[in-house]
Image (cartoon, rainbow, N blue to C red):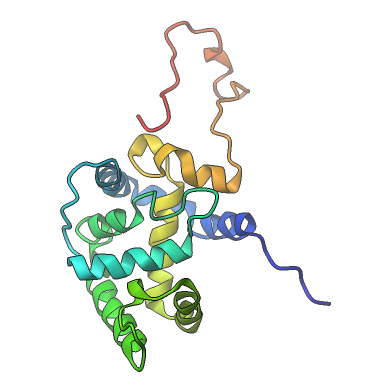
Length: 199
């Protein structure tokens, strides 16, 4: 019996869970720094690239925009994922930097072969999706997909997931429950103020 197609929300929920909480926890300080960089860039702050060239960033931005596309809600582009990835290559994920660069080079060369336009970023959506389906099983795409998803789902207080756009995609409500065993004793504390999203 044929399985019904998975919704965008189901895909993102499953993909986010597969990243591994233990690994993210171990890398948290550097991930938070990379997200702060991404948020500053997306909010109109300095957008200087630290690792990627402008051409590489343009191509990578087109890739992440197809991984979590913009429709009636914000996607990876609005979350500043390409700036997060760029900063990550100079910080917590520096060990993957050369793999990302060489993988992107192979991605671009493979796309350019026999195509016009030769740049992935300049192609139409149907052409982009068709090519991504061809390279979906490559280590390069796996790396970019993981980095993009991290860039969508971390705490906004740490600089990424601007305005909770990633959480809204998966239906996560960041509301403190004040339920035992944690938090119930703070319910009536007058000095306790929850941080505003994005602060």
